[in-house]
Length: 64
Image 1 (spheres, rainbow, N blue to C red):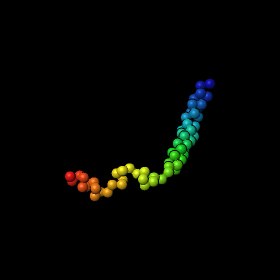
Image 2 (cartoon, rainbow, N blue to C red):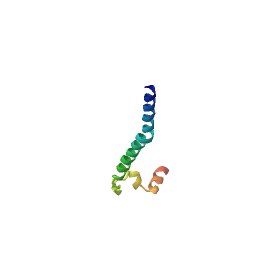
Image 3 (cartoon, rainbow, N blue to C red):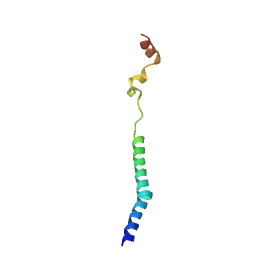
Image 4 (cartoon, rainbow, N blue to C red):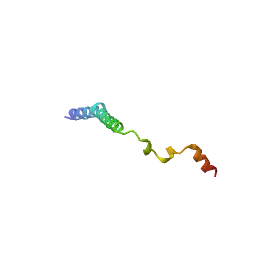
């Protein structure tokens, strides 16, 4: 009877490592890929303020 218990545990770990973990990683990868592909491209007016400033203005303010 003890032989069957050891064999069952070993089978569980083999399934865990070679089947369950890769499936979980694939699912997480698919979810992240889908989330990334649903992003709408930024419109120019939605960019942060610092993206619209030229370096000329920044240098003038820093020199003052």
